[in-house]
Amino acid sequence: MVGGIGMIRVVLADDHATVRQGLRLLVAGQSDMEVVGDASDGRMAVERILALRPTVAVLDLSMPEMNGLAATREIRKASPGTAIVALTRYDDDAYVQELLAAGALGYVLKQSAASELLAAIRAAARGMRYIDSALGTRVSSGLTRRRGTEIGGSRISARETEVLRRVALGHSNKEIATELTLSTKTVETHKANAMRKLGLGGRVDIIRFAMLQGWLREV
Image (tube, rainbow, N blue to C red; front, side, top):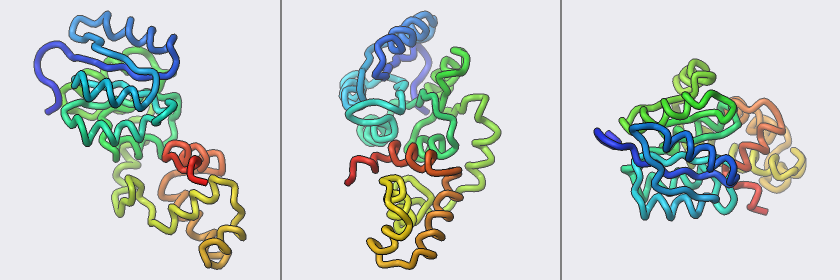
């Protein structure tokens, strides 16, 4: 179990100062919580968390230096006693699945009521998973459907990963086929299978998923 009886020590990470200030006021206003630190980027968040060892870390997904997914993976390795709650505007199934697979216990939408975040922090402090109520049923069914082979936190094969990464970088199916020495039909099949497994609906979803994974920095 993460955390124990008593004050819940929280670190907040978001690259927008106004958001951090609002979160600090919200969390510090709770009788069972205290904010022990904050960070404006993912790398700083990891450093603060390793130094402070909070009960719960609230992480934005879209941060400079290191995004929330990468930070979650680092924190789970280096500070397993800290529970992680992801706070984001993205309600994509793929984002939720990746964060949970990386070890986050909570996933909350920024557009939801403040009570969702507070409930997620309290649940995570007790070692319990909490998914935003706007996503709960959909994500629960997705977790059941998508159990299977995982590669790098994803439920797609290495070849499907390579195809999807190249699609996100703007390569055409024909170009990908040439690069990977495959037929165009095989590339299309790998792309379709990867999208189906990850719940991605189109190119915009692919690009957003690639950003989360850090693929767009790999040229």
